[in-house]
Length: 123
Image 1 (tube, helix red, strand yellow):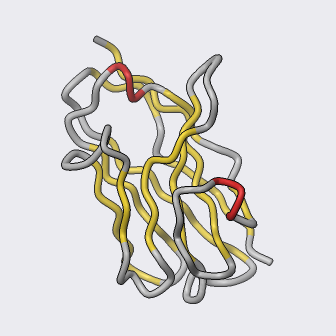
Image 2 (cartoon, one colour):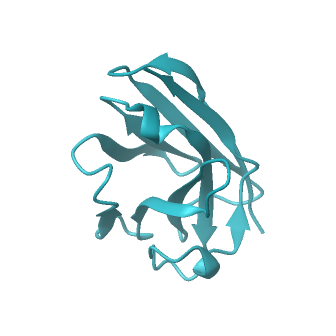
Image 3 (tube, rainbow, N blue to C red):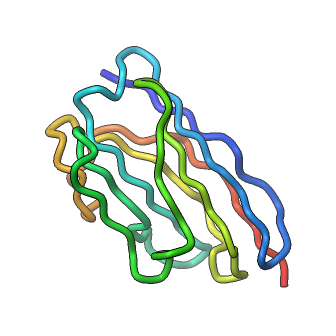
């Protein structure tokens, strides 16, 4: 079992940047795929980005492609770098881990979820 904790959210002006972190405890990310999802008030949770366990496959939602980038620097932390932020990026952002290592766009295929971190982009 892996426990996920997100951090790095906050308030930023349109055009600014934030880097979200997803830290794992209990186990490392070495065999897990990681996905990022977000949920705005009154809306359903939507896919943002995902990477397979090997890093060989990465997927981004069209709405964030070219602006958001996933990365990591060890087996216990995953990052989502968000640049050129827009007001419509405002949401609670969640990281999730898939024990099968697939890294899909489907939230139901992820086993573990963090508590979420709020990102607010002002116009």
